[in-house]
Length: 495
Ligand code: NAD
Image (cartoon, rainbow, N blue to C red; front, top):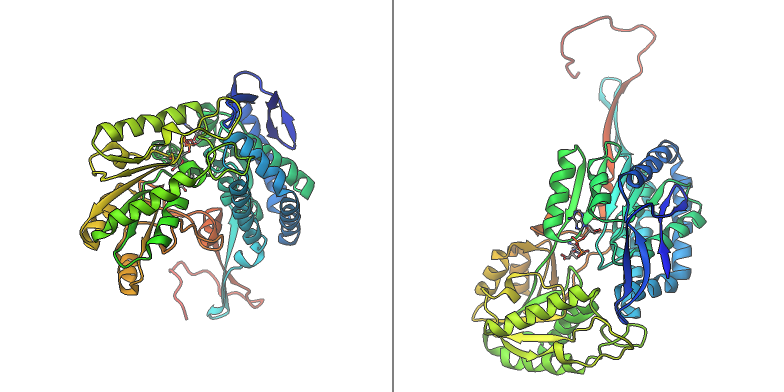
């Protein structure tokens, strides 16, 4: 049994009070106990980050960049270890876990270019012998609070940029799969990051509340469900912090009548059932436009039933849900969908998983003829359940998406460039795919949704991430000749 401890100021710190079980979702077996911080441990993590800040802030960009490059090299060489940890606590299949690490690594690579990203502007002689330049400085100790579904990638959306920019960090991972962050903490130390720059605080609401209210934390980056994202945004901004809080999603994919239906069916299966649907960019609602629905549903059904569900270490296509409670929640929605009158085409409750023990499995599940009033449509299920809705026109499909309270990701499948261009312009969603079902932006663009999928106004990584973790300053300077112009109480006029 692993004892999963906090990482504060470069060392492990054992739990002082409460702990919670961590399980392998493929077997249902408990593998460890994770510390749940109290206020004292929360304060200690913030104190470590605050103590390390002045030194790290003043460390040259050249030196900071060297540490980033070293971290990138270590991560690249050893990412298989991290992927195995992710599979053992989250459940996603090993290939997918490796993909997650690679996408996080791209943000580390982006942050290696911080010297370029922090360059300011300079204006010579803005007024006579007056020069103006702009600089960006780190904000201070910052908090990153992350969800269970991407235990490595989501924290990596933030901390490489934050650290490269000169901030110090306290990360609060999900208590469901906490070990990935401890592994990365050790990697940072090996890469030469000074102790206290990167801290890991394990826990639940108690730990989160310390980070949201502590006066030494200057910025909070959060990713999780919408109700908690809203709470985090409201609480931390009320305590004077800048906040980006990314919330839940209900992502739609439109298939127009002219689309390649095999391509669309492959995409729907990948985006609906990858990582057992536990992705904030998963497609959970497919809108079939015109007369293609029967053919498309048949193609998706054939592909979904051919998927192998089981232990992520056995080369399966799809792994388990993260906990027994998550599994029961998903099967509850499947029961509700049937009761509400949707057509259950593929029933994931009945599969036999390729796994030992008592894992938390639900197979790919496909509903047709789903109505907008049904709970399988209105709620974020966060499981391998794909709902097909049938409409007559593009306009009806667009209206459905724009009426939805979430606005994280969406996709259109068509061969009509004009329709795709219209969609890109008209849809009220932050990330849009054209014949791409999961349009996650590259690290040098920014990731974020609209509406109830994001509270705050900056998105993660890319230029917006750099702005979030830095503050702008503009300096106006005049180096006078030895004789100065004397006192003048008037507001200066440019000449
Ligand atoms: P969650 O909201 O339950 O937990 C997220 C974090 O908040 C965890 O660290 C958790 O410990 C903490 N937390 C939980 N309850 C809290 C409370 N009452 N007060 C304070 N902190 C609390 O989310 P989850 O189940 O871990 O993750 C799944 C959710 O995250 C889904 O809704 C998914 O769409 C969303 N998500 C969104 C994005 C995005 O980019 N928008 C990315 C990944 C996941």
